[in-house]
Length: 360
Image 1 (tube, rainbow, N blue to C red):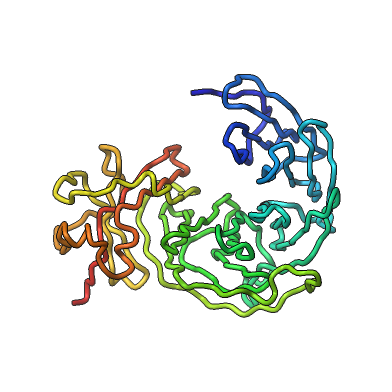
Image 2 (cartoon, one colour):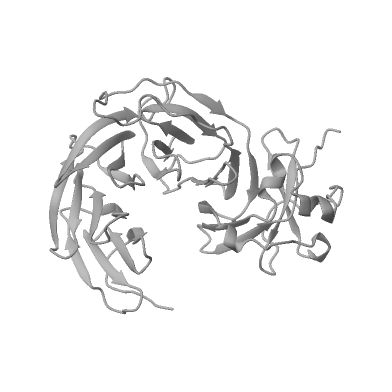
């Protein structure tokens, strides 16, 4: 539809405005550029002191955005005035911002740093005020020193719950200022910008991995209101009480690394899938315990990569599909998943399968 040119070096981040008309791009060339989907040329340029690693549009006001980068400064920009209207520092010459997220009400900004620090800021008029911080790290072992945070996402409908991805092979669920859950299984420790995302309707978390797999965890646990959620008086550091989730499913998505994995919106689902019409070669999904497997189909004519099904799976009847079935596997039936990776391909997958107990 359109190709935008102008950056002089690698592009590190993109962000859409809330109404999906404008796009911001951040680059190693120290410039953020503003684009419109109907225009070929750049509308605005915003010069920085160092490379820009992360940007986010203000969710309530497209005339503002935040940026973070190599100089360790978080900036709030006015698009119309082309200037910085507020800023905050990471407070360390050897650290820098690597991930950003706005809360849904746009009152809070969560930021992640290269050294694994998660900082929370509040928008107070024209000021960005630090409210709290937590160290995203293990208590012991080689990851006890904080690792780079590669992704942050507030979970819709849960305003104080933040999903944090970091370069220590961990995904953390932070509620208020407490780390309440930790998800393990994937590989993310070499600095790739891998980021997890959440499917609110069905309570699943999905993430790519360096070895080309896509991992899915069940996060159907309902979190209650956290007593440490942002309030008038928020402690600078928070206590940690976590639950580890080591159970997951995975499938091979790319020959190289899988840096992006997303659940497509429900509007992409087919209202009813006839299992008999599926003819593509399936990819068997393994579970962490090797007890369950789920058959996925590549949406294109290519079969993708991975294990080939043996035909031993017992599929449910069409009536069971219409009724919604039972068990957690039915929640992902018909789910569309989009992945991208180091092989330069974007792939679209559709789940036609259900868990099968291999031990019975």
